[in-house]
Image (cartoon, rainbow, N blue to C red; front, side):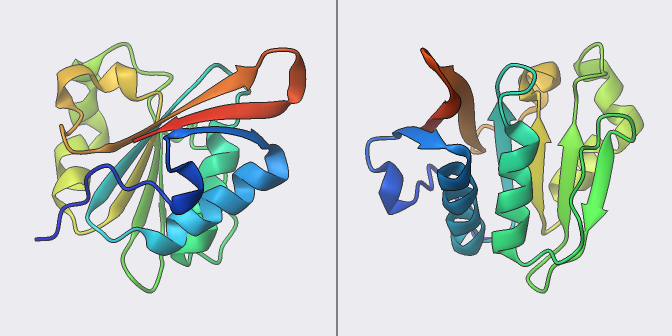
Length: 151
């Protein structure tokens, strides 16, 4: 089984990007093109920072053709892509890692799939050690830009 560790596209050679939304979408699309399942990608950031926008771009680059929406209320959305399934997971509504069993967490991680996790801190110690983590932060002084910290 091939494992991805610290996969960062060339644009993020230093792991730190200051991007507009269109640039972030392009970066996410390129990341989606580059990744190989199985892989867990975690997205952290404040409400409205762009986690779902980045997840949509990653899915598009990976080959998901259907509309990707926020799984805030459903908790897990599954999408089909030619290479493998993609699971988009939003843990915001969970109180802690003990509730992961209720959403089939271990089954998701055992599949040959791409799993994109928003609010990964809610998974605690149950996040795989080798996941690709991306922080999305607001750029101070410019609400149209985001800072991505990847790898």
